Amino acid sequence: MNNPRAAWCVLVTLLILSTIPAKSADVLKQFNFEAPSTILVKELPKLKLENPVWSEYIAIQYGAKKDDVVVFIFDATDELKPFDRLWIWSPNHRDFKIPVLVKGVRSSRSSSSGRKSYFNRFRPVKVDGKTGWSTIMYSFLFHSNSSGIELVTTCSIEKSGRRCRFILKGDTHTSVGPSAIISVVQPIAEPDLRMSMDNRASVSRLVIRIMMGGNHMLPVSGMSSKVSVIITDHKTGRFRARHKLELDEINYEKGYKLVPSKPLMRGRIYLATVEIDLGRIFGPMKETHEIVPSK
Image (cartoon, rainbow, N blue to C red; front, side):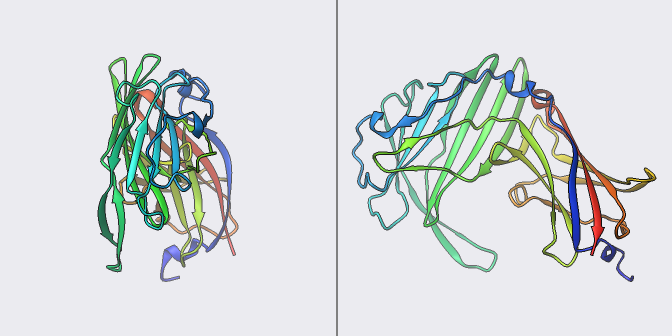
């Protein structure tokens, strides 16, 4: 073949052989989170909502105690348009024991095709919490558009002189209406290094993601921003390819796509080992996957 990458077939079977999570189950124990409980909308302070029937609620646990919760209430002056009012309340946090109202700012962004979309942007909401010996600072950035609510969370953790910062983004699950039961979300979870296969293109590609709970995770500081990928022959142990991926804000949601630099034989079993060091708080992560190119 003229193109050596063409030997990497379109159809590939991927089987996870082993996973070595960061410091095993001890990662979450260091934060001492109490299990959160649900919240009833009727238990919240009475607010002057424009459209209470359509209002949506998000509750996030920011500290170790189950009552260390901040509730975000989204309201719209026009029920046919995106949310433009955000109420913030917390039973424990000093800044939000009295509900605070934040108004959205109409904004726009252009797609790669040049098409504009409009949304309401709310100023970042900063919340700090204590978990054991750790201090966590959250910055919650909400956007509201015709499809729903988007949330990008920046987490900064400090523990005994050790620091790290990372970004989380994923699906936003809300509760709707005055009779809703709100499930409380814990943003901090055990990191998960994932590998999958993308067979939609003419050449199959490895897709690598770092997840935390249901969110895509992007290391910012106090963590490595590089993922190491090594591919070896399962039978002979011979080295086939080595890659270094630089994590960036552009690709962390869709995953980092990699085409092996050397052709792989159809029907032969290879091992792909993926590693990243998430610093002194979350530790190193390593996964080994079996990949079998085939038609």
